[in-house]
Length: 76
Image 1 (spheres, rainbow, N blue to C red):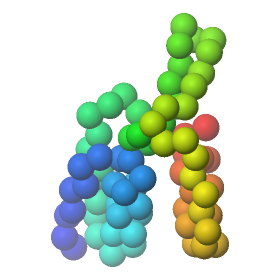
Image 2: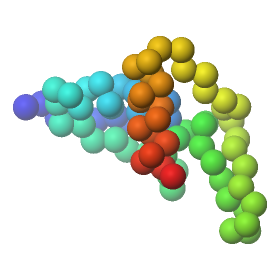
Image 3: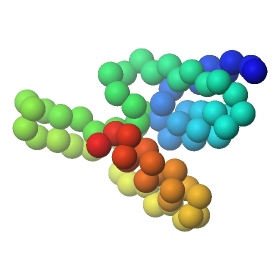
Image 4: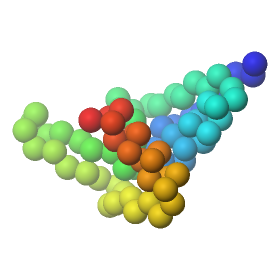
């Protein structure tokens, strides 16, 4: 089995890591505290939260909708 390294856990990194993980052992490296890249959510003073970067994701295919739903379950 080959080992693959993906740098970044944004939309692209998460998508390719998910696809590759079906056949390979995949490690994902992220420099930030959490996953999501430009589509992540930040907290301010432990009370307020806000999204930054990407404004929204509008998946069109059922396969991508399922993938996005899985990401939300892992994050929240």
